[in-house]
Image 1 (tube, rainbow over the protein chains, first blue to last red):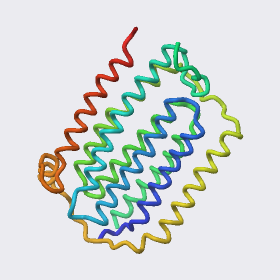
Image 2: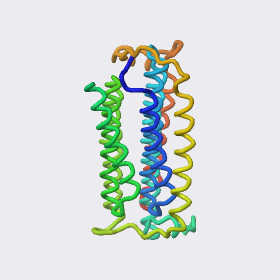
Image 3: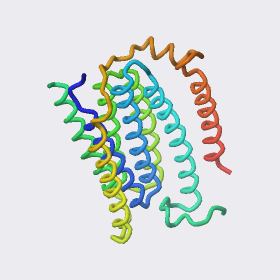
Length: 104
Length: 166
């Protein structure tokens, strides 16, 4: 048995996740919102791996969930940044409260 | 003992830099703090014995995604830009939501985690990961692997379509 308790990992990822929630709600720049989202996804990935290690050590389910979640979040970030750069090209800033029209 | 010390160092790094990353006024600094969080996460994977995830985390997150972020920050902001001041009326609900959510999660973790049975940990070898990823049997993951390859292809095409000049 590992010397680090399961709860320590869970509290750590909870702090990370809710730091992300705070940033997601309080930030106004789209890129920083996306970065907060990244923090939340990362916390969820760690939780998958921790539960895999502590509860089902012989299997690889949590590892693969984390692996595919990393892949999905990479795809999501790439598309989101493409959209943000497109918005910047059109209205010259990326603050969410100034992006109120979808069509130009 | 060494494991515990490494864990607590990584935990302090993650906590401090994730909070700095969402409160820092300068966006490039926020991105750098996020990079530190992602690297410390990779350290946690290595500490738990998942070498493959460590490599994936470093190469995809710390290598790929952070480069994208830094490029797009440099494209969309000017030197010395500071984040817009956000009024307290907006910060307060965000802080309350985060603290309340953390309190709820902490309560659940504190009162329920001892009920789960912890078992002896074994580290997966690269061979096991490879056969599990490329097999079609029970507990094997060829289908999601193919699905994610299609997702990445769609993402490449979508990225080109969205970002091209009209």
